[in-house]
Length: 171
Length: 47
Image (cartoon, rainbow over all chains, first blue to last red; front, side, top):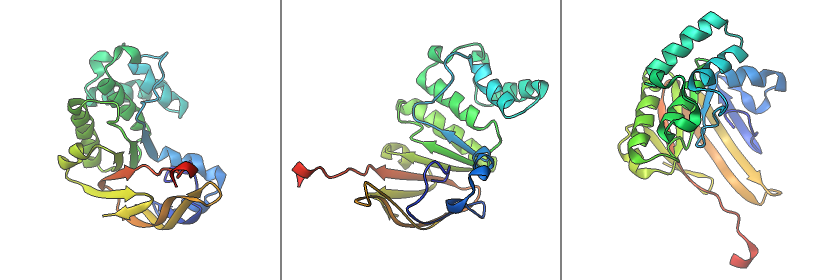
């Protein structure tokens, strides 16, 4: 709903002071450029290498070639995957693929990151790496919202936590 | 900032409530997690 993929049956949702429940369709792309989304199943481009998974998205949103090259390099270095820049996603571990998908979510420099079960396909060690990455993103100023079933992971994670049970909030 | 005001989301001709009266505010720059209990439709033979 924050991403305006679906709209509420009733009620209002505000993102950066704008009521997105009644947002015009023409304004949805602008909303989504401000939100980076991370999926459980990564949704990478499997016919492109790591570098181009980032570079391609930048080019699509209109970043000039030279700037896109520089930014892609910087992002891959930030997430520790620069040395895997030529590797295709199938040759990356699940943890590396998820870090790459997080990097892709950062391309538009969004103020909000939605991470939907980002550790769902990862072992505990890789889950911690992904969590650290999300914490670093938050440290740089972005709002990070993560959904998870992993209670063990949450115990190591000092942040505001709520439980949504059968549609109701349990704080 | 993200704010939900009395948000409801119902499915299946309003018989399945995915969200019910959700009110929450997430300030800008917050690190935030939520755990989810998957909403399950009640199948007739379970009732």
